[in-house]
Structures are given as structure tokens and as C-alpha cells.
Length: 226
Image (cartoon, rainbow, N blue to C red):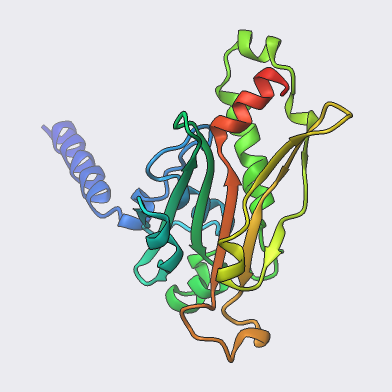
């Protein structure tokens, strides 16, 4: 009987612990960037700033609506838009996210990565995408792939300083004469605490935008070498 009571007490304690899990910890489960999905930009947000805050990701169907949209810091909200070709293949994913310093300002010091660390760039997301894509490939695909991760060159982000200029740019993927795949993201980055932007409207500050080559396009190019 004593042993039964002990096991019951342990089970109750474990159940209580699981019920006490906050939305932050539930929302923190990582998702792959090997393919496009409805939470792609929320995962981009997590990887850019190492946050475990719950995130609402808004899928914009219309580019005009996406152009006017703004991410929100509390509650945390991101916006996502995909660009397709005439065959409906996804070529680009555009994400509007918040900066780490804005999250720390709104939610506390542990809401995002340490301020002593260098902010991550959209090119870091391209790196994560390449690694996730390679990890998702089967042995046969890896063996036949024309471009391996070491042959992917990540170029410095093309940086815009206004939303109107960023929205006109796009991510780029190109194959060089050296048979290496070059990926270049287009970004807007304006930290919340940056003194240069203190005179700007609050809706403009604390934002990090990325135009990214889609994982489907990167995968196709890695497999075909074209």
C-alpha cells in the first residue's frame, strides 16, 4: 500500500508539472526549415533571436496587405508571404519579425538572445535552411546531389533602410562559374534601442525583415546544380 501511494503521488506530481507548462515552453519546439509551411516565419523569428515566446504567424495572401503589415511585439506576431512562379512553385518566402532588443524591452531580459551577442542576419537563416534541407535528404538524394552544403556560398544581406525600398527587392540564388550556389537575402534591420532610429515612428523600430530564397528552390538547385 505504501508503495502504491508513493507511485500515485509521483504520478500526480508529474501530471501537475505537465499542466503547469507555460505556452512559452510549448511554443518553443523547433520546426524544420527544410520546406515551406504555415509556421515558417515564426520559426525564422525563433532562430533569429532565440526566443521561446509564443508566436502568432499571419499568412498574407495578398502582397499589398503584406506591404502594409507590421509585426507586433506583445503579443508576438510575425507576417509571412510567399512568391510563386507561373507553375505555382514557391520561389521566395518573406518574413516580418521583431528584433531581439525589442523583445527584451517588452518581455524581459530572458525573452531573446544575450545583447552581448552579435545579432543574427537573414543569411544565418539561409545557412540553417541549407543544413535542414541536407538533413532531410535521403542517402540516394545526397549521393546524387550536384551541390553539397560546403558548395553553398552565403552572401552578405542586401540591406534596406525603409520598408518601401525593402519591399521592392528580392532574395537571389545564382550559380557561379565555380559551380557554387550563391544565396543572398534581402533585409531591413532597425533595432529598437538604436539611437539612430529614435526619431522614427515606433511601428518602424524594432523590426527585422527578410526576403529569403525558398527551401524548395534551394533544394531544387542543390539536386540539379542549376
